[in-house]
Amino acid sequence: MISEKMIMLGKKRSVIREIFEYAKKRSNEIGRENIYDFSLGNPNVPAPSCINESIVKCIKNEDPVLLHGYTSAQGDLNVRNIISENINQKFGTVLTADNIYITVGAAASLTISINAIALPDDEFIVFTPFFPEYKIWVEAAGAKTVPVASDQDTFQVDIQKFEKAISVKTKAVIVNSPNNPSGVVLTEDTIQKLCSVMNKKSLEFGHPIYLISDEPYRELVYGNIKVPYLINYYDNTFICYSFSKALSVPGERIGYVVVSNKMENSLDAYAAICGAGRALGYVCAPSLFQQIIAKCINETTDISIYRKNRDLLYEGLTKLGFHCIRPDGAFYLFMKSMEPDANKFCEKAKKYELLLVPGDDFGSPGFVRIAYCVKTEQIINSLPAFEKLAKEYQ
Image 1 (cartoon, helix red, strand yellow):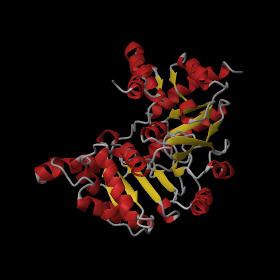
Image 2 (tube, one colour):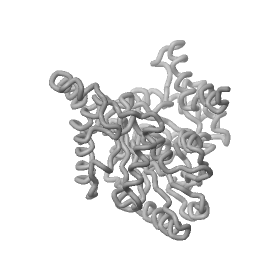
Image 3 (tube, one colour):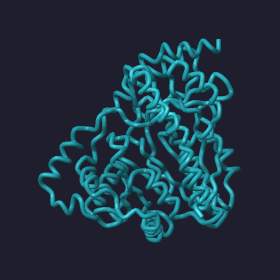
Image 4 (cartoon, one colour):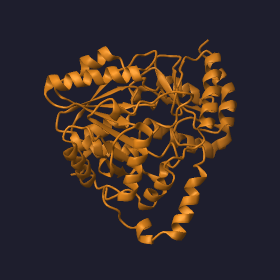
């Protein structure tokens, strides 16, 4: 007997991937330059030169076993030392290599963290809009996802709704800042209020409520926006990080989990992370790219290009009458649909070769996500198509 649940997941791609596949088909029919594909968060800005240069140097000079052999399951010790020291320098923490578990990207970081703590019938709170795969990963671990609606004007956490949603079954809260799909950065005030509620409820229920911070977009912020480092605000925190976006290497699948050194029973928590990685079949993260990130730890891709794209798109769409949440980070714009059904809105957009992602699967019906990690020319060329779409609703 084959798992019906897995068959269903295998047959039905995420809405993002469905639109991405449609984009490939449409490109073959009319040419890629004639469609405006805003579906997938695939960085278009090249990786910093350090990446390719370090690959070449490593291949020429390093021991092949170091580059292509197994590392320790939790990652190479030297690389984990470099990561922990880098975090300490940036955020004033006192982490060591034994707080770091190197993973196959952020997806592995999250699934490992969830499986490390989840028990049957546990609840994991997520805030709308949220990355749809959270629900898949939580439910695969035997737990339940509890969506809590954010403030619809700012997409900051609605603290009153959050406090009402927490129950004795709450095992963890997942936050994602800068956020996919909205680009919103949770403010320090929001984080402080969130953590205050979690501390109070942990004490009330007599068990820790964990905070899982999903941070693949941490470096992609514009202006003087501060992204609070949550270990400094809440002790029982797991940080799930990926180098995919900051270094434009999503296909290389490299990230890490940080287990706070201040976490209750932190040694057992780290052991559970290692155990979950083992149970899920993650032998170790790619050896070559463990060495590469160690050499490029302070590098980032050219974020100014994303900021330019953000400004062009936000200003262009708002002038056309679209209501958008202004993103302070990541490379997504969350726009209100011009009709209640965002799926119908996105189908109408296809008439003008605009490929947008409806917000329903993100927990926010009536919104659409636009990924602006595309060539700037695509944004400029798409604005007349958006204008035609807007006129349909005037």
